[in-house]
Structures are given as C-alpha cells and as structure tokens.
Image: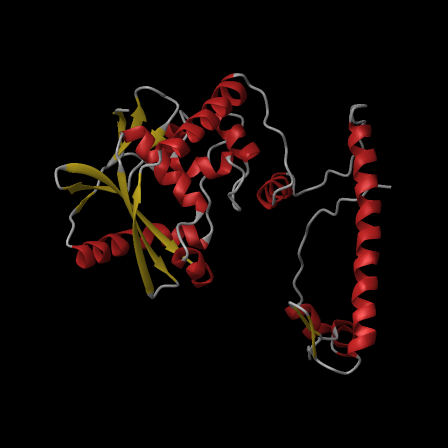
Length: 311
C-alpha cells in the first residue's frame, strides 16, 4: 500500500491541522473506534468527523507533556540505538483507502528500508504494561501507520514515569491490518459518510463526554420519544439486578468475616483474604461553619455536576 502527501504540516496552524484530521481516520482514532481508548468516545469522534462539533484534541497533562517530551524521546532513542530518526512534517493519506491518514513522528532508514518511528510518554503506573509488551492502543496505531505507508517495521520508544526508557521493534501484522482496515472502512462508510450515529456505549470516555457536553441544566422538562421506554425498563431491571448482586456479594463477605473475626488475613486454597485495619482522617465542615463562618466562607469550594436518576 502506498501513501501520498495530503498536506505539509510544518507551517500548518493547530486549528487547520485538526480540521485536516477530520478528512479521514488517523492513528490515534483507531483505538477509539475499537472501543479501548479510555479518553475519547467513538460518538465524539463521529461528531467531529461529520462536522457536528469542532474537532478537539485531548488536553490532559499526559497529552501536553507527551508533545513537549517527544524530542527528548527521539534523541534518547537515537543515542541508544545509533539509528537516525528523520521527522516527517506531513499528513499522509493512503492511496488505496483514502479514509486512512497517518501523521508520523519520524522515519528511519533501516538498511535501505523505510521504518516508522513512534514516540510515547507514559505514567509510571504503565510500566508493567510496557515491560510485558506493547499497550494495545499503541499496537493498533502503529499497525494503522504501516497499513497507510506500506512499511513492514516500526520502532516505538517510550519514556515511562519520567525516568524509565523502553523501545521495541514491531513487525507488520497483515492479519491485524486487515481487521483494522475493515473496522475503519465500516465506521467511515456507514457512520461518517452514511450519517448513522454509532451506538452509544457505556465506556468511561463516552460518559465523560456527555457529562462535559451537557454539564448545565436549563431546568426545563421535555417529552422523550416512546422508544426510550424500552431503555428505561432495561435500566430499571439492571438497577434491581445490581442491587440483588451487591446484596449477595455483601452476604458472602459477611460470612467470611464471621470466620475471620479479629484476624487480618485468611487463606482458603488459592485465595488470600485480607481484612485490614484502615485509619482515615475526616474534616468536620459543619462544625467549622458554625464556629468560624468567615473562615469557612474563605476556604470553601463549590463543584457542580448533574445527577442522573430514574423513578
């Protein structure tokens, strides 16, 4: 598969770069469409690709410092491997599948063959994930890039926790690439071009998207379509089931507690049960407000959110 240059990005504004990304599916979109991205919802990127909301990039600190530290990761990789990474300031587009885009961190001339370079930063909590392999969202991303460019190898390097460096050589996986292309083609043709909204799922990313998008209540009441009744009935059934399962789970823990009594740890076959002493500190805001209202008013903070309930 070959790629062409859609646009050179060296002088492109951030807003224009985000707009060009809506013309297809980029490497960071793949894990979202696959439903394994904890930060972005497939419904959100559908709205962006169809022009219903302005495109936006995750603005969390991981993304921010990932951009800042990319040159550091690249430099460290070159120092450790002796390989030269060349930056590619361009957005590439697949010739065979024009909906597939690639914005590469760099390329390497590996014995006369073009190899992709990808730089990452990660929390120290992700160290085990990196030491046991490649996080799945990044595997999808680099296989997508190899699908667009025709490359057969990718080096991915990561700075983890600010003081641990890992890098891997990933081989092209044609079986995975075929699945990625089929998944992206379905999303692009059915959801984006066809205008059919993807199913709204229960992932944390989708929940946070709707909580953020509709964070303020106007206080009004509306009539919902009749087909929502089916969802309401299922929501009520699941709520009852969760309550019953929670009660059953609590009953089991209470039976075990009755056997453990004042002991901290219990062993039953392959299971190790812990019932530890925990000391926590609290803050009596009610008492402070009564005793020193001015001090309370000075330091009190307010947060706002919308509580969902059904009766």
